[in-house]
Image (cartoon, rainbow, N blue to C red; front, top):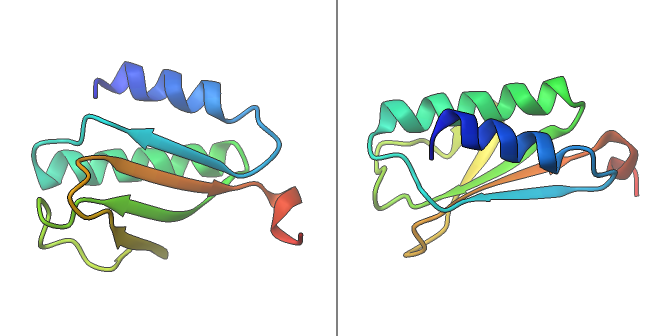
Length: 95
């Protein structure tokens, strides 16, 4: 997914006042590009006060990824060739 496209998707997703799941259907080809995308997602969450709480990605394609990216847990999405970011907004954490 092109950087401008992912930024547009982040911008459209975050005005919501509840938890947000952003699904990326074009997973990067290499681990370096994936790490840049994960970093952008985490930073976008900080910028919008929506904490990145979980990441789902195809571990088969990225076998060297740990079970965490910084403090964020990473889950295997199995055969699905998608990447999902789970964000939690502060006003929904206590509920």
